[in-house]
Length: 268
Ligand code: SAM
Image 1 (tube, rainbow, N blue to C red):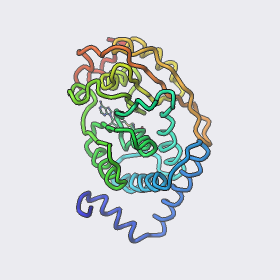
Image 2: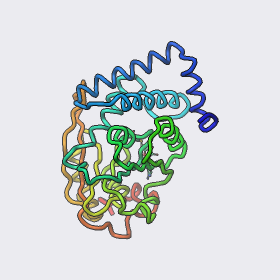
Image 3: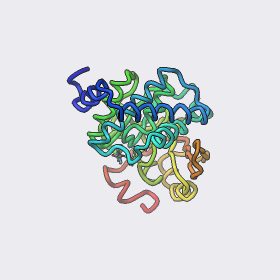
């Protein structure tokens, strides 16, 4: 693997040197994550623990050079990124039939990469418009030895028009990408009829759902179902909003890149 990703090599060399500071941060991250996972009710294999630990270490190392996350305290990365990502998965939605999943606007891999680590049977596509974030994702995929996961550098509006992506996924997931009317236009075109979109949202989930009612209907979705989420040690309001796809999305959507954001369907 040497010589493949320049930044990753720097990181690996750093690890080999095992400076006291790096060891402490990594150990703390692993410990925090294992505690939070237990409190959340996740049971992890040694391989999954190791994969989360390496992912966290790479995230913090690359974050020194590019903007990947505002959260850098080990406990925050563990809970607000890793466990938060895990919370999008619910057995009544992610049944055994769900295989192909797309994470729209994945950034540094949230929620798609933790989902893939926890549920390796998923075939995951991570989409982001920023090339440098996609390079980071490729490095993580390689370092963790993950298969069945692809990082795609594209705008959602363009990827969702490609034959290989349009209405090809059993589920789309997304966190912190856009307000719901805009996000629905980005994400529902990827989803097969019978599949669903799972959008992670905060305290204003009901207002967002109301504002997105028209967009969801136009794009072929059913009225959303909201599920509250509670993370270990946090009492802020979080929810996942699930939108089942009932009908094909009209060919008109998504509109050209930038239009969904500039002219959301609620106002169209
Ligand atoms: N989902 C990640 C998370 O929760 O940590 C990243 C959130 S970040 C605030 C939003 C991400 O969405 C950015 O990485 C940005 O490049 C990406 N994004 C925004 N609009 C997009 C679009 N139209 N197509 C693809 N990616 C988009």
